[in-house]
Image 1 (cartoon, helix red, strand yellow):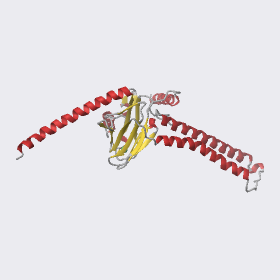
Image 2: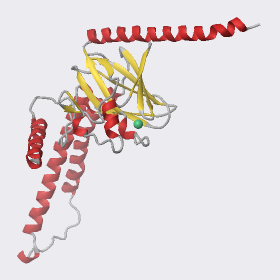
Image 3: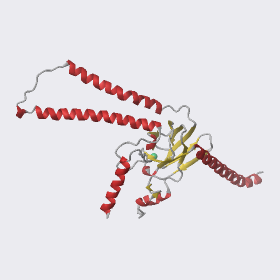
Length: 297
Ligand SMILES: [Cu+2]
């Protein structure tokens, strides 16, 4: 029974890995390649990786084939005699020039993408990301909206020592989200250049959503910058990728990418909720302060 389930899982995984054109939303177990992601930058990184991989593979195959051929054809039992020349200008020019050309072929597009990755100008909105042991705090700059995002309750209950709960049963819409789900996802609009400023309250964390193609360290006392422009709506999951203490494994990231209109509706709701909460708090503070004023001389 267990074997059947393992085979079924393996087949499903292979299907997901080789699914042509069907870009899976999130990485799958035993995935062989990088994800192309859901942003222009992530796709450029994916293409660069593939280009470099092809070049490395071709070089590797040529070198290993030449070595095997030489070992076989120039073996002692065949009476091979070693050549005793020491220099060959043509060969030396070739093995210097060819690697230089290959490096240029790889470095030019890589540098272009790097410059693009660090260009946070002309962004339509800014989100401040604050890492803390062990949760994330998101602040929509200039909007007065902020909230914390921490491990979802069912994952948290399941991960507790001796909980007796099955991690395989922490599921959301058929996807196992054990340790990958949060209570409040970061909601972002698609087709919008979003700038992130990333920092930390305590130790070094790192904000990473594989589908965006980058990681950004969250350093206490420093602001790191990055940006994204998401192409399509979806739920994109990530994790803290800096070993940040005991519960490092329990501070996942969930980004919910929605259309611009949906985002505006959501933002208006959040603003209204935040304003109501502030009013209630102000009312409570005033009520608490009132007796003190009355008894003042
Ligand atoms: Cu962390």
